[in-house]
Image (cartoon, rainbow, N blue to C red):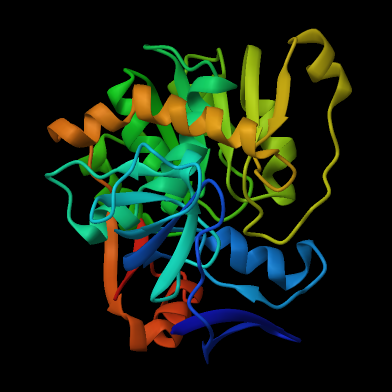
Length: 322
């Protein structure tokens, strides 16, 4: 079968197409014929130096049809439409841990389903499980036009929160107003403290989702209200260190947490899936929520799609259709 692999280079990464054997499902796994998959910026950034570069299969989630079932699986059948996180979604076939698999609501296309799992499960982790976002609270999202950023905006508005977002593109911020963005700040780095302070009546924001990284970390701390929470999820700036204002951390009783699946055991990852299924999946099923897809590319166009993601022009998710 055909599969794309991420190859680390001195100046970045490349997506290399290879012919590899079709993966067979092991115990507790589904074999899935991939119909669509999506780009997740994190896996491309990780291979650029945040961790040791390594050759790896591309694609952290997908949507497709179950084609075979491994031993011990009795809750899915061949032919069902599923979506979920996986290893190697940029391929004709992949395997998926049955604990990660979700049935696709009938109203969703393959492309829509492929744009959901990883981004919106990260959002559930940030806003619900650890962020405890409440209706009426203020949320600040740095890098709001990213896939995770747009998903966080959409969910936060459904939860009744007010949202401040930063982006280097005023045009993107204008478009995100249609999704409910309350305050947009055009900046690629710090410089959003005054806007956040003014919007919140000098009280500060209750929760920050930091997609950008170390260059804005100190500014995020400044923006937090009493008992504010800060989720670190991305590092688009490739900056992995930052200073912490311990006086603010102490006096304002702040909570700082990271959002990553890198070291999480499968059982903990499964808890996130069940939380997403309980809290978010009904929104997709009834149409209150739909992923924001920027562009859809064919499987043969993956290198071009990668270049488009790197251009910084995207708003929301870039999807690949097989």
